[in-house]
Length: 130
Image (cartoon, rainbow, N blue to C red; front, side, top):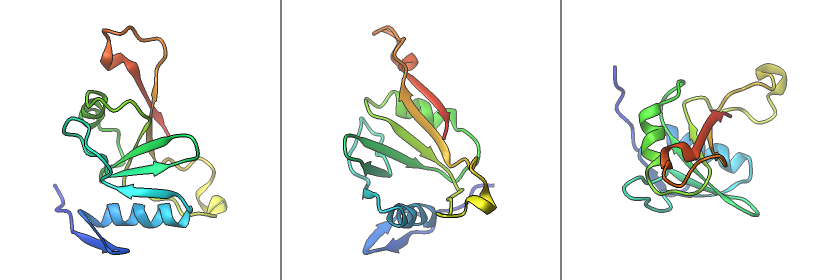
């Protein structure tokens, strides 16, 4: 059963879904600098960019609790050469370590796999639980 996204406004920004707006609120709670739909990588538009001191992490939000290989492949082949966080419907609550434990999974992080050959673009990235 597919759910229809409900457009939601948060801080004057029209998000495509309530889930995206929830994540934006979470980023604000964490005092992270973020931007909504910051750029286009050959047809893949990340939902967010989170700006750190030395790097940018792009974020894709999907209403899921399981890894989505088709979405991961789309991201891997998009030409994006940065870390990517694929996050789902579980948004952690800051300061909730006693109730949630330290093993709360928020999604999957894509990092560069340094053992790839130049002609193996798909093998360049490694996805792991975050």
